[in-house]
Image (cartoon, rainbow, N blue to C red; front, side, top):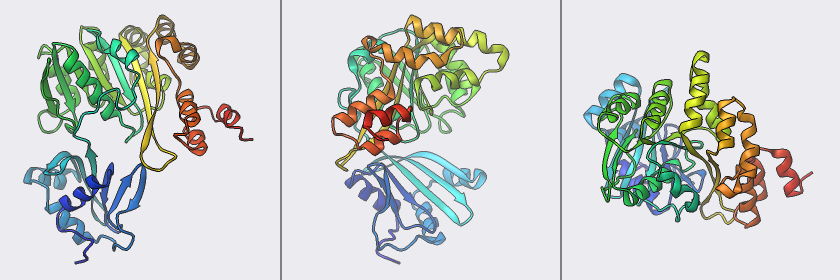
Length: 360
């Protein structure tokens, strides 16, 4: 066996932790690979490609009997994995050539809102509502879990309430501080987000965190919970505040849209849309953030189905803490934190961004 093909996944995970990686990929026909500061690269340039027998050996090194049974039945399995070096979100899939393994390395230290660069003077007031909906959105790997964890940790200290988190899988661990915190994992403690959310409403919670709002039933239950006296925090895979509202509305049948628009306009508290961008210096990533706070003008746009007007209102709502993604990108570029190329690639309005950057 090659010196680069380790007999247990823990060996690769130790390397990933030591070199500040976000993900480790162990896939058939590829050398062992890591994602470091957003870039996917082989861990060792001279390492041979993993063979089907290698990845099967690695799968055997850490899967329990229950997870093996699920993998054989469904063809893929996702779960939280823990070893002496830390916690991970693990995914194993069966594909044409064999088994592929991917680990997301979870930073077990919960970082504060200040540490990750969130505008706390505008976010803290949102967390003090006794009801309503706060959404954190962005692509996979854009730091949504880290942002949610920092907000939940603040609530855990700031309020004296009951927090329930529903996750797939559990990532950050929240010891109860001033709040009583319950954490439930989908597939391990409950069969689905919708089922867990329905159960949570009978547990007398004050704050509910829904790891992913991915279907009609979950979104409907989250809106109902937000309306009936619970503060609900959730995530969606959308790239901007306006698209997030469209996504929430679009999952409902046409005949329900008017009623749902009213519900969303009344229960929404705020939306944080984020991206993680490699630093110009090459030694890490920085967050670009779009923020919407639900004002009378925003609520009116949602009620009347005029979400296309929302970016204009965000643009003029700086006093309430609102900002567009492109404004955030421009600020990062002006501060020398990101390159002009990344600034343009990540922009919503490429024409205006080219003018700002002086590109013709």
